[in-house]
Image (tube, rainbow, N blue to C red; front, side):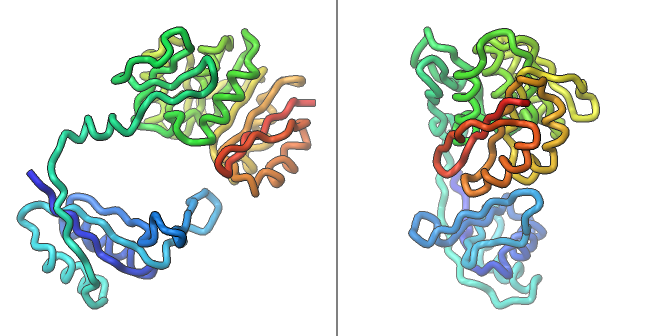
Length: 295
């Protein structure tokens, strides 16, 4: 059964209100896209905690999926009337029904992390059966290995876990970093995240990979020190968490921090230099992974 996709051109002032009005009218789903996506005018927007949340593209496309019984023209008119604007320009795109599961799976191939480490979805054969393969599917929580910050942290763990180290993965998401640490030889490993769904995803992924890791919500997490602490979150939370994360690293232990844009690296280093001596940052696609040793 084909679907009706409604694409409404609007501006930053009205895009969110229009989306809310469409939801109230009963559309199946709504998203907001950059009208200039794929062109030189495309504008990246990062919604980092602590930064302004009212950023939006100057020209947006509100994309809504309609059920069969909804009339596109009447729907746009009603949504516009609800927020007090004239009906904006729109187009209707017919989206043919297909096997969405297979389509989604086709977008996730095995990801090489290093010569010996791969991230492999369950529906793929491992490209290198002799490598260390982390079996991981897209799911409830962030972290599949496709983002540069995740790859940078995985590469760091692969290069720096010698064997037997205690590890804390703070902001564990899918548990991918904790799982990788165990697979490359870490000893006792814990993961912490504020999201209960991350607990579900991390435990499922650890079981799927045959590794023993204990995951905690912050209030239940142990307070001891670790040989290695890795935190792949975002710059502002990393700044706020600096004293706590530093306290979890043993003297002589290592910390790896990511989720940091290259231009933000100096700010993070300045704060964490109160406890750590930093190596040269590793960078990929405008993101960095910072690593230091505790004095």
